Each structure stands twice: as C-alpha cells, then as structure tokens.
Image 1 (cartoon, rainbow, N blue to C red):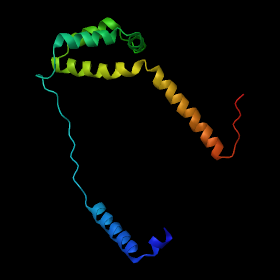
Image 2: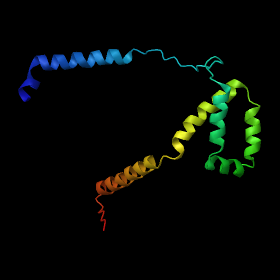
Image 3: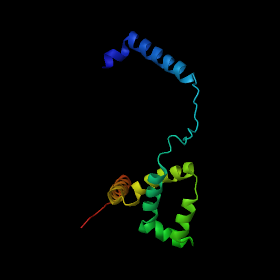
Image 4: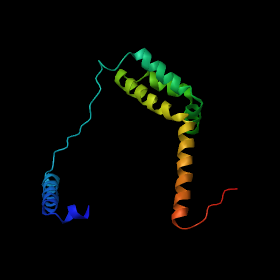
Amino acid sequence: MAMVRKAGWFVMVAVMMAAWMGVLGSIRGVAEAGVIASSIANAGNRVEDMAKVQAFLENKVVVQKLVDYGVSPAEAMAKVGEMSAQDLHRLASLTDRAAAGTSDALGFLIGLAILIILIIVIMKLMNKEVIIR
C-alpha cells in the first residue's frame, strides 16, 4: 500500500477527486417545500371520521386529559359534531398518529435499554468501573 501512495498517478487521482468534490459541493441546488392541502374530495366519509374521533375520545388517557383541562367528554363530542367535514377529517387523521404512540411499551423499553447501554459506554470511556451484581 505504501508503494501505491508514492506512485505519481495515485496523487494525481486524489487531487482530481478532491477538486471534483469541491466543484460538486459548491453547486447549490434549490430546495422547494410546501404544504399540500387536503381537499374535500379526498376527505373521506364524515361518518367514518366521526367514528374514529369518537373512539379516540373514549380512550381513558384522553378522557383524563380532557378532565384535567376542565372539558367534559360530552362537551368535546358536541364541539366535534359542529366541525366542518374538512376539519373533522384533519382531526381524524391526527388521531391515527396519536393512537399509534399511546401504548407503545416496547418502544419505551427499547429506549430505556439504549439509554442504559449509553450510560455504561460513557462510564467505560471515562475509565470508571461499572459493577452489576
């Protein structure tokens, strides 16, 4: 390997690659971002959305949070019933995301295990002893 590094062609290829990466790195692209609005046609059925939201509002954790904020579940359902179809669909899509993370005990345990391993690694790097009995 040392012989290859001393070869003139290796140095020339390395310099050309560095120059090419510098040229490509200096070219800036244009990033475009925007919000895609959901339309009423894609909003789905109001009855299905109402069922999703009602099932979400019947969850114990959600009921407790509503009570903590001073809102009764009946008042919340009344407000949901007054919503437009587009707002109701948006709320129903948000309940799908929220419901996915409410009872993820496995994710919590994995996160806890990673945290413990990270602490042990940091302790080892600091030359501290970790003794588990």
